[in-house]
Amino acid sequence: MNANVAAPGPVGATERVPVIWRNRTVHIEYQWIAPERSDAPLVVFLHEGLGSVAMWKDFPRQMCDAGGLRGLVFSRPAYGRSTPRDADEVWGPDFMHQQAHQVVPAFLDALGVQEAVWLFGHSDGASIALLMAARWPQRVQGLVVMAPHIFVEDVTVQNIERAREAYEQTDLRHKLGRYHDDVDSAFWGWNRIWLDPAFRAWNIEPEVAQIRAPALAIQGCDDEYGTLAQIRGIAQRVPGTRLLELPDCAHSPHRDQPDAVVAAAVAFIQAHHTPA
Image (cartoon, rainbow, N blue to C red; front, side, top):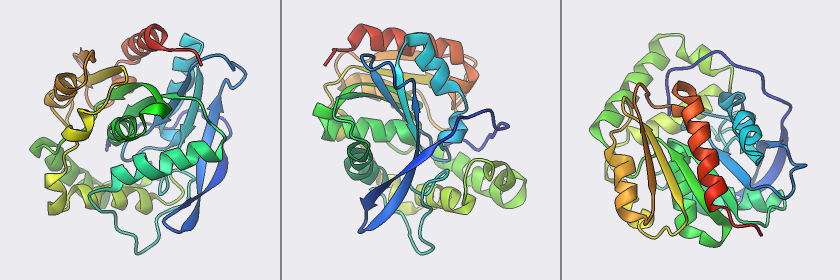
């Protein structure tokens, strides 16, 4: 979830895999990183509310290379080169639950991933990671969540309203179009549900309290889409959570403070990983 869009960077070739969801076949774009490191922890990267494989740029590879990790990056349906939303498809308040409970497990199954994975999520992707760890604990080794949402704050809604204005009135739509085959599919799916009055009651604190996997929660002190109450709320509910609150950092810690994020994430995964 970030309306500040940088220029695209180099991203390697991606593939697509079919998955059945909502009684139709959707094709999910993905990219493996260092699959030859067969004994290394596998980190699955879950993008933000306007993200995609391409939007991550080379950060997943940098992190995997720094820690000797394997990586799996993908674009959720409606994003990147994955199947766009149907024209009449409107997301409900449970849209992140659906991704965590149905789409991500089905995607991993389609690729034959049977091992428990590490989830590295950003913004909406971080919330999805939390929900998946709560619902499918046997499939999740641990979590690194950046700028997660566990409840809706006024500051979040206010800045999503500003993002809508920018999309309609500036070149934001053009910039985002570099990262998505159908940019309206990505933007309006995300924007409309976050601004739906029914979504103000969205809250995943009860699910977060069920998590027993090790968790590293990261947030910028200048995050324009949420306060530190988000990651501190995780620490209150998940035993042993490590917090990293980064100064001079907004909603995208992997862009604003990449070295700090890589160092903390790699050290955390290496300290808590349990070999299969």
